Length: 413
Image (cartoon, rainbow, N blue to C red; front, top):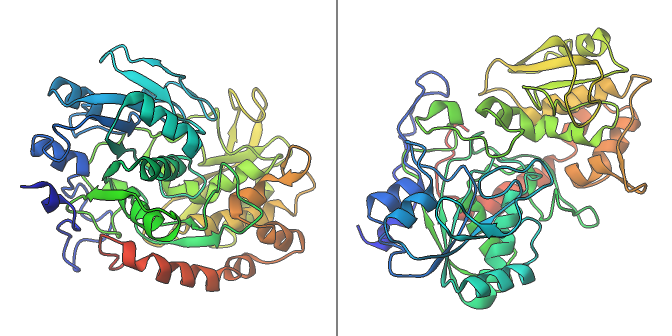
């Protein structure tokens, strides 16, 4: 197959395909799988730079860079995002620039790199084509999607070709949640997309190229086959490699667009430092009554187990926390953001509750949700339905805006 044969949307499941969870392990081929099967033809003969982390693997867990290097593809440099190329750094950290022990290739520290720094790194590596392969988890505050954006912007400035090896969105293709607004952008929300964007990295790259980049990059997306927006990670036969140290399982990814908001609460741990991050939520000043009220909301697709835990690091390290474990019972009806809003609404009623203030001036929850609206509504006593209903118009507009850039069916998602 020639290079152009990869670029259109891959073969999708028929509209009558199985509901998530009923027929798990449906066969899906990633962009990497397809490129490797073609002998790397789309990039062979070019000096490439690879933007990747440990998730860039085939179904035998062989890494993209290791395979390309062994097969004689010319790699000028590797670029590691947050947590690093080999994944050894914790949240907010990177591995630094150095030589990769396995391949001898130079690995550049790309975490928090501006487009200007990307230009310098690409120039130093002498690359002419950039290959991106990182597993995203579908939330606006997960930083890899900004690694994608900034590296695309730099590649456009240098006239480089940019190839995205696509992977499924592990939580499906549905978009949901509030929009990022001017004045609230940060490292956990840089662009005007909704909180649960519901796109693959290939679709996001197309969206960036069409909506945000003044000078579009020469973009090619090598698509997945067998994936549609109604499938979650557990429905496919693809292996799971934790995309970051606190994203150990597909279950974590499912809840993360919602319970990730608890990073914006200083009185509650989001479960970092436990074996179930973002599924265990609690704090020293809470008890069973908060969980009982959340359970009484009867939110769809979820149950809440009374839970006690002691984080080993991060918030409340070494302190006993009381709260809940979020147990998803039906992924098709579960809404992570609505669920987390309900949890926040009930937590706000507790005397121990407090929002996290960043640098003494900014509420972290505002940066996560894209504006002060969610926080001020909850502080004023709004219900779960009132809070989630407030973003209906902007969510609908985003759905229309992203439509031309989608590569895969959203039937039933």
